[in-house]
Image (cartoon, rainbow, N blue to C red; front, side, top):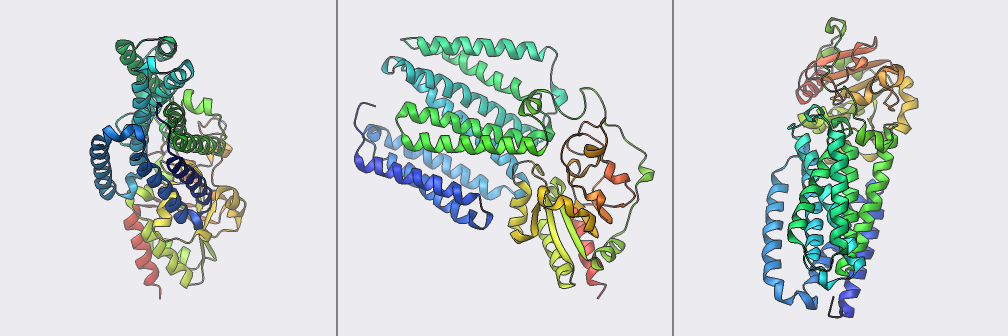
Length: 462
């Protein structure tokens, strides 16, 4: 940048940076997460407001205000209208917008290449490429979560197209980074091919791996923002982007380990059924059913009850009813708790967010590593809309596509009650062997209605 940055502005960026770090640190602890969000939010507001005082932005302030008003207004309206079951779609969409914004900044630099040196142009190319990939991948995840695509929507010779597209993108990026003059046509082609590359890279990923995918593209968006921060000489962007990249990368690695698979397997090998195959089903006559009253008796007179939530809980919006159910059981002297699998739901921490919204105390929520050895001492496990994460075939059947994935060993408890809407398979398209286990009873119906029936039945026992 041609003009020097005032000391006060640099100090504001420093305070914003410290706020990001402190806020992120507090987010690692659920009891402190709320204040962490406020601290990080303060840092973001400070970083945005301080930019109004940058000497090179004086002439563009009206446009900036209009853009912020429109963007902020639309986001506020959308955030107020979206329900908790669609939070994963919202996160994927907003991450896509972050990626395309980072790519847009990089593209503007490449339209004025004569004003920048080789290092800046190279980082602009990388920022543009990574931003376009994050945009394409996140938007694909958004559409996938809305049910518009499946892994079978691929095409023949996808690998050839992927490699050819990647080679062309790298070639165009090299030309743009080393050119002394702008090439708008090549830049548009670079953008188109980078977005296509992101789609081709994402297409083989199974829907079962969507939480890992969203975390990965969140990390890539942060990396693109960090590169743009260097290009714009903005330390706040560099630090914030680097923090997002580091945190997202670590979360992606942890989630990949949670399903016992390498990231390369998740991204490229596909998961679940092979293309064109149909889910194998077993004779539903072997499923043992139960009614709400009998299930209520099992839980009301149990010593310990553990609830395992899945995406079905989210779609039915049953988290508040489950909280009411556990309160009733607690009043009867039953020890209650929740068991959360790391990849339950459609985004990282999805079940934790929903249970926190319902007011479930954090001490009642147990991770897989903490609870798995205790299921043999649990009297009743209530599975609410979960499939793949409780499928014992992942542990016992080497022929299962899920084999090797750590699951919650709910089948080792004394009784399992599964709340299930219909006969469908899990998100990975794999039949759930838990449904046919001797200890399992299935209560068919909408999860929210079924939990309400359990509540009424328990109240009727008094």
